[in-house]
Amino acid sequence: MAAIAVLSLLGGALVGYYMITPSVNKENDSNKGYDASQVPFTASVQAELGDPRQDWVMVLDRELSPDETRKLTSSTDPSATSAYLKSLGGRLLTYASYLEHAPEQYKQLTSTGRTEITNNFKLRLLSTRSAPLVIDDWEATNVTCRPSTAKAIVGYPSQGGVAYQGIRVHVPPRGGEPVLTDDDEGQGEPYFDTHMIELGNGQSSGALRVEAIAQPGQTCDWSIKVHYVDAYQKAQWLQLKGRDGRALRIRTESVPADLRQKWVFGSVPWTACHQKPEEAMCSLA
Image 1: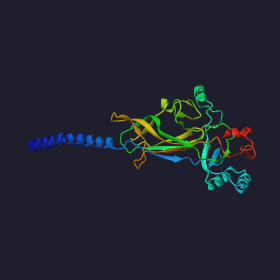
Image 2 (image 1 turned 30 degrees about the horizontal axis):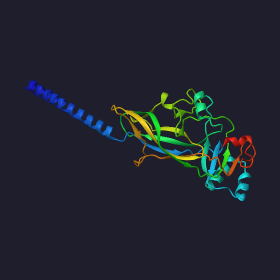
Image 3 (image 1 turned 180 degrees about the vertical axis):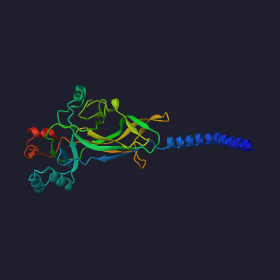
Image 4 (image 1 turned 90 degrees about the horizontal axis):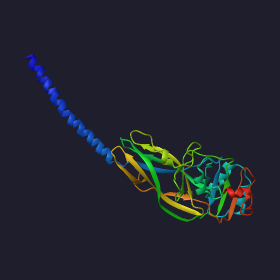
C-alpha cells in the first residue's frame, strides 16, 4: 500500500510538472508580446542652461536703449551681464566647440570663416521595455527655416579652444553628421560609426549633449528620426516623440548678418562691433 501511495504521489507530481511547463511558456510568450507592443522609447529635449562664467552669446529681438546700453557696458561680470540680458528678453546661444582634431574634410565642409553659434540641448531617451534595444542611426527631418528676428547680440567668447563631450549637427545636416565633439579620438567623425545608444533591459535613460547649428541668418524648427533594432528582431526608423505622443520639434537659431547692434567683451574691453566691425574680436559672433 505504501508503494502504491508513493507511486501515486510521483505520478501526480509529474502530471503537475508537465502541465506547468506549457503554462509558464504561455505566460512568457504573453509577457514578450506585451513588451514588444510597448512604445520602444520616448524622448525629451531640455535647453542647456549654460554657465554664465563660460562662453555664451545672447540675442535680442530689439535694439537696446541708450540707458540699457550704458548699464550693459558698465559691467565686466559675465554672470551679472547674462542675468541682465535675460531680464531684457535675451535668448541664450553658445559658441560652437573647437574641433581641432576633426578630419580636414569635415573642417573644410563646415568652415565659414567665422566662429559658429549653436543652440545646445540635452536629448534624453527612455524605454520602459524589459528587453534591450539599440539606436544605431538618426536623421534630422521636417526642417523648416525662416529669417532670424534678432536685432542685437552680446558675445562673451571663450578664453581658449574648448571641446565638450557630445555630438554636433548642422540644420540641415552636413556630411556624416551627427559627429563627435569629444576632445578625444574620433572627434569630428560620424557618431554612429562607432557608437550606439542602448535602452531597455533596466538601462538608465540615454542622454546626449547636442550642438545644433542653424544656417547663418536662419531660425529653424526640425525633428529627429532614429533607427533602432530590438530583441524581437524588429529594425525600423521611428520619429522621436515625447511622452504626450507628439513628434518632438526642436528650435535652432543663428545670428543674422544684418545686426543693428553687436557687442563683444571678456578678454577685451567692451567693443561695439556695429561701429567697429574691423576689430579682431568682432569675427567671433
